[in-house]
Structure formats: structure tokens, C-alpha cells
Image (cartoon, rainbow, N blue to C red; front, side, top):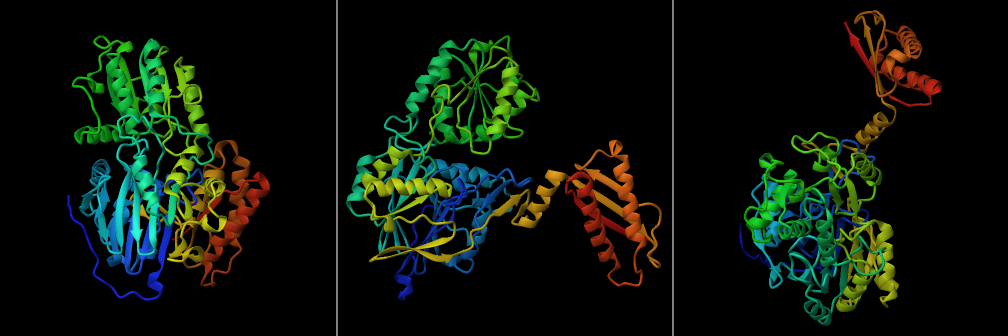
Length: 571
């Protein structure tokens, strides 16, 4: 790791350069893909570089990252990348984007650096990253920006807000945060320090909007611990806890309570094991020797069910995650028992409701007792609810307010909260991804200027090579399937040889639809015979005609629109 500070050389400022430009490349129209640019003259700092998990209408996509084409040609202006905490929606794009922006120094906390570095090892061609470890006392000089930090609470240790002092005023970026006066495995937010930052004057506050529609305060992790202890006291058999692999505070809670009740802990899921290993090695998790039990050493004769806790990922119903394999009897060592208590210790991500419900149904059919956050307080969100946001606003007392990190609807609610506390509506900027917000010493404004901020999709080893057209084709195939039509023609005459072959995938079952398939074959045959073999565009003509005519015919017969894939072979 590299520990150093950078100061940009002095550059003569023009009139245009006297403006501070804030550009959010991801996180203003979605939950995830968080990335914010602060630009003043020839100096740029980046806050977070995250990924977004795919939406339901994105078949085959692994995740989505920000579009950084605005930074092309400006790589030498980037003074550093600041990471607020170690969740993938704030760090997940680093392996893909850092090489494209010159691999600048990453400024972040020790735990976040460990998680980032471990993930980087999975990308063999990615450059070795350079880190500068920060904490709440750190002060950085990054070109025109003097940067400080204050501690906030989230559901992973060492989460920080960014205080960027610029020539036109101070910008505060909260990152993901909540107010927890009694956190588990972390220090409470330093409200005195936050108030001091506010007393010195803040031009704009950029604040988390993810839970802005929820009233009240976010519940404390201490409440969750109390509820989990009650469950441990009464559970007759094994306790299985499903949560996010990155929710390290919850993992620590479960391990500490298991130790209190003399239960062994089995951790299942590669990501969760890796995160626990990193956090434990760096001193962020406390685990007594002998508490953790490897799954291949688990013998039910030696370890009765009422002495076992299993921690794993999959509470969102993710394919191939532990909890799903466990429910479907596809796990090598474990299967559901009737006296198991299964705790879903996470809220349901929007769009996953049906998948999670199916998972619960499968587990319940096998006799397991299901507990989730709507039945008991077994999960505390990591994001500020309305009263938390009001407290942050009262402490910071910003001149301007910029809601961030959520869908537009949530940003609007966050904006209404700020307006209710007296911030003038004209000083509240609800922007879209890529929309430029400008500040001078006279104030700020939401401009009409936009930079590219569309989705860059990662699919396997491909980054950005899946376009909207490819996605559209995948949606068509997922909805109505495809029909492959293979016609073999004589090279010199264009005459059809034999009957066309037809292959159906996801459209109809051919053995039970012989009449439709045969009628389709005859129509293809007629199309191939009605041609001008002297036409130079014969191949394209016949393919387009098969695609159009057969598509129309099948829609008339079935009211479905399969993708028609014509293949013409010349022999």
C-alpha cells in the first residue's frame, strides 16, 4: 500500500474555472452504481465507484457500472478516489474503471481497503492499487480540495462522510449513513464533530436518500441483538441466519451471541467467508478460538443441532447462494430439518419480493420456522430514515441540499424533508445522473448540461459490449423464445435443396405442434422458391423475408413474437 498525499501544481484559473462542478455519474436514478465527481478548474476528486445489480429486465447481465467517458482526456486532473465504505454499490466498479483513469490513489479506511484489495485479486489483468488509509482525523490536500472526514454509522464498520473544502465553499457527502447511538462492532457517529463542521459553514450537503420515505429513526443494532438473543434462548435446533455477505456488523452480532449460548458457527458462502477473514485479520471482528467450525468437520454426533448456528448468504433468493441451495437440497452437507429456525436478517431489495417469497415457501414446506424483519426486529437498515435525515440537516445547516443515492421518487421525498426544515426550494437540487450542478461564491444552480451517464453493463468478461439492442434481443427470447430456420440452397442457381429445417427454443414444443411447424416449413419453402437468383442481395433478401413473413405468420397463429433467426447455407 502507498501512503502519501498529493498536491496538484498551480494552474492559472480562467473565469470558467472559478466554478465548482458536481456531477453524479450514478446513484441519482437507482440504488447503487454510486459515483460522484467534484471538479474545480483542473482538479477532480471522485467519491465512490460502485456497481448496481441488474434489474429484472436485464437477462444475463452480472452488474452495471458508471459510464466514465466524461473523464476521457482528464485522467491527469484526477487527484484521488475517495471511498466512503466497503460495500459493492460503492466499490464494485473499481477493477473495471481504475485502469481507465490512470490508477490514481484510493483514499479509504483500512477495512474498505482490505475488501477492495481482495476483490482486485480476482481480476488478473487489473493494476496493483495504491491506497492511502484514512480515519476521522485525516486531512488531505488534493489539488484545489482540502478534504476531511467524520465517522458515520452504517452496517459495515469504518464508514465515513466526506468534507470537501473548495475555493467556493464546503461540500459534505454523507455516503451511506444512519444515526445509531448504540452501534454493534463500531463507534457511534461523532455528532459533536458533525455539528462543528456545520458551524464552520457548509455550502451544500449531499445526503443519502435510500430510506427517506420511512418515518422515524432507524432502529439501533442493539435492538437487533436483543431480539436475536431471545430467538437463541428458545430455538430447539439449528439456527440458520441468512444475510448479506457484506453486512459484517450483523455477522459479528450472530457470532457473539452464538458464543454466549455455546453454539458453534458455520459460515457458508465464499464472499461471506472472505469478508469475515479480512475483517478478523484487520481486527474489526472478535471471534473466540474454536467458535468457527468448517463444514467438512461438522459431525452431528459431536455437535448436536441445538449447538449449531449457520451463517450464510442468499436471503434475497440469489441463484447459487447458500440459502437457496440449502432449501433445494442441493448443498453437499446440509439439508433442511423440521426443527430448524431460519432468520432472514435483511430487508427485501425491491424487485426480489417474489423470489424471496418462493424461498420462504420452500423452507416452510419442509417444516422450518421462518423469522424475518416484519415479524421481529431481526434487521436494522443501514440508511437514514426521516428523523435521522432531519438531525443531519440540523447539525450541518447547509445553504444548499442535494439528495443522492436512491431512485428519483426517494430523492424528491428527501428534498421535501429539507424544504420542511427551512431550506429554500431554489437551493434544493434534485438532479439526474450526469446532470451538472454548478457552484460559485454567489451560490449554486442545477444546469441543463448533461454528461454521459448511461448504463455500462458487465456480462462475464465483457464490459460495455452488451448494448440495449442485445438486451432487447434477450428480452424477446426470454418472453417468446426463438425459432431457427435453416435453408440450404444451391450456390449457382439459388435453388432450395431439400426441406428447410426448423428448430424451436422457448417458443413451442415441436412434438406437440407438428401442424404449426409443418405449415411454417411450407411457408419458408415458398419464400425460398419465390426469388430472383440473379439478385446480388439474394442472401439478405431471403433472410429478411423469412424474418418478416414468418414472424407475422406465427404472431397470427399464436399471438407470440419469437425471435426468428434465418440461416441460409450455400452449397
